[in-house]
Length: 618
Image (cartoon, rainbow, N blue to C red):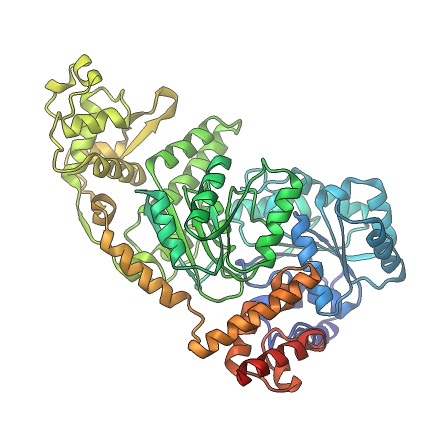
């Protein structure tokens, strides 16, 4: 760890950082939590920062590099992320470059010249490149002051985005002479933070955990009925907006992309089975254009720094509650309202269980992974505010949020004790040897061949649950699983068995409460949600301002195509929305708009002023 600096000098540098924030990036002040982290970095401390997505983590290493006029090496996991961050920095007049497999000979020579001359402030590299001897020698000569490790949770072997190359970064830092280290992530529970500290830092870093709440994200989850229909209804509320639909398989990404395209959406599939050129081209379309729906596996997303993703949907249950948080966090990075929807079913839960059980993890790690999955299932089935349950998992307390489906639409519950006892009794009376299909048939009185063969038509539980349909019984079984009253042995053909907590219910010592909407369905609720979400996700502009915003977006799209860069490299949505409201007439007025720094004002200001003038003249 580098030596701590003089406190007075660090204070002056923080004031300079605030000025740079305004002059270079066009932001009036720090976002919550940024100033403490930047101050600690400027004071010379090693830092581990856990900040919610959209809180501005990259600014925590970009500002110190500019203020100090020294070189910061940024380890970043994806080429696309490096390319787009470098484009953003250059658009703001900051000397930045990237070294990766896509770097051409001319660009490489230019980067080497800038490094040798001391002109570069930020150099982005992939972790794999650090293993190369020529890279190590080059960086040793370049006098790296700070090593910033983005997406630092990738160092955790049991994290959802584990990258083995991240394990080598700590040793690489030693060979560089021990530069100051800044590690950043949006997703790290206490165990993951401990792994990051042990793997990256020689001593104890200053740790900042600035909360996990993303209040601009609307949270919604629901059981799968007709997933395609449910997703199309969700997408209808976001026509013309960019978003991601996460899928459980490569095949599903292709099928849903075709289905959404047939419904009039601009949809593209993305998964690891596509060749690199196709993946890169589709990613560029998503980043550069408005209104693209990406149907993707988890191969897509980490490092996608697109601020105006307005929605994220899951066509199936994510791997864990951390993965869920990370994936929905790709929406609304600009701080504007964004929407999420997660669909799930018992098959998803059992698939995740099977993946855990069949993994090569230790018994202890499997236990941890099961707990993480159970936490996600509990979040899906909760009758409480979803945000309260989600934040409680990360150790935070909060009041009901008013921005999740439970808070907005309410949840009706009913005493499910008798229904639970019937289901649990069906398991016990069949020797806890059968799967869900057989048990549901037993409860609904369906005399299948197996029912007759095993003599189960004569059991007292045969037909005792005809008050519910098969679909409703499947929902009840899922809630039994979520509540820990029953479990499934995946190694024995998916047999269901009663847990200790379930025995207490069977004996009448514990009551059970079920969500009525999950069991009975809620068709009216879907329509109410649609209207409310439309209102929540609107930019708050009147009709004329919305028309101006559309004209400004068209201007931005043309500039982005000329630059071969994402649209937000020109200006983010938030900036265009403020322009549409304020309608600046002069450069000085334009400079007051959020996100308009000196370099962008000089480069793009006149173009957008002219677009506003044309619009007003009609």
